[in-house]
Amino acid sequence: MSRSYGQYCGLARALDVVGDRWNLLIVRQLLIAPARYRELLDGLPGVATNLLTDRLRDLETAGVIERRLAEEGNAVRYALTPWGAELREPIEGLIRWSTPLMVRGPGEDHFRAGWLVVPLRALFEGRAAPHRSATVGIAVEDQLFQLRATRSGIEAKAHDGGDLDAVLRADGAIVLGLAAGVLDLDDTPGLVEIEGDETAVRAVFNAPTPGKPPS
Amino acid sequence: MSRSYGQYCGLARALDVVGDRWNLLIVRQLLIAPARYRELLDGLPGVATNLLTDRLRDLETAGVIERRLAEEGNAVRYALTPWGAELREPIEGLIRWSTPLMVRGPGEDHFRAGWLVVPLRALFEGRAAPHRSATVGIAVEDQLFQLRATRSGIEAKAHDGGDLDAVLRADGAIVLGLAAGVLDLDDTPGLVEIEGDETAVRAVFNAPTPGKPPS
DNA sequence: CCGCATCCTCATGGATACTG
DNA sequence: CAGTATCCATGAGGATGCGG
Image (cartoon, rainbow over the protein chains, first blue to last red):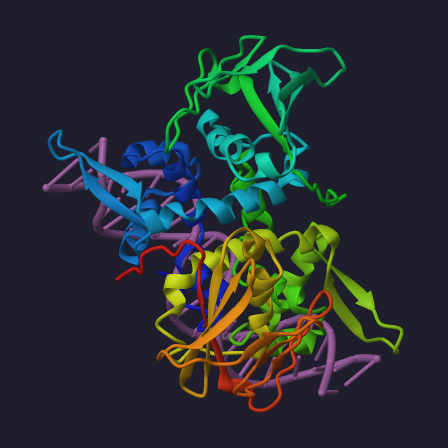
């Protein structure tokens, strides 16, 4: 555990628990689904093994995550506690805030399709959708499309002006007409399954109240 | 600036900007009010002067804060940009999440009355109040009182069962019957003024959906 | 005084190799 | 597979200096 701020302030005490490097990204992975150690390593490109181990221990003793022993032999599975799962709200807030940082595209950054689960749930299931409209852009094989979620439903159009069929199915899956894949958002904690090349799907999110890009 | 996560994920890119130590606490201070360098030092007990300088530069180049030259001579004043001010939402989320960490009281931690501005605004002005009820406990000279904000107004009662007068005035100030002080929340970015001993006021917040304390 | 810049020490993070 | 152990680079924290 890192050094405490020593401040009687909710934000400071929250950061004492989840403010260390990698901690919130670990929570992001477990918001997608409970995972094994190896799955976490793969979903957190760049993390060192000793750091992941340290952070998992810290988060466990803090009560954010828990180790579950699968009935199958001795396999360990990490999952969020109910309190840890409540980090979804501030994490979704940070994701909405990050919009101006996403519009420049992925560049050389790593990408995992599973990362789409959290913002997609924020936009289509969360509180943002019923309250105010939101737009999600999905780039499929270098073409950019926009999905706009309003109270009346989901509209889709190509970024260049042409229209596109997109359906939010009754079972919660989003099917793009270009058949890039099926995003399955049915049950908590949510799991994305994408048919075809995983790296073919990129997403750019427009926040409900977008701020100014940092130039 | 610290090392980038190198992940095309909204949370990772947000943390590339505000994830470094002290960054979100600096934003907290500027959510209270624009401030001079010296005021920031006082509102961030424990920060080293070189770190504060570094972080202020990082946040400025990232577009989160800006330096304003007051017309009075050469005084520098730091303030949030519009984009930086949108960090209020995720910060309030983290503060709500931190409730189980606050109930154990301040202990040896530092305290500044100004820190109350952010959560109080979250509870009484923000989205939490109209949507669902919230309870704020304020400890005044070792006595604990609870303020409960509902759609119908503000109720107050002593923690031990006795009643207490508390008024949310039309001008936005909260006046406790015990005359501990007046919390003035009138205009953005909000300023707290407390009459009397600053350290006499402590606050414990109950989140709308409180999680389990970490034992 | 204010607003930093420099210096120093030590804890932490990162990459790689290794082990039960 | 699920971590440990090790080594090195970096960053945090405290003290002090310094120009305006």
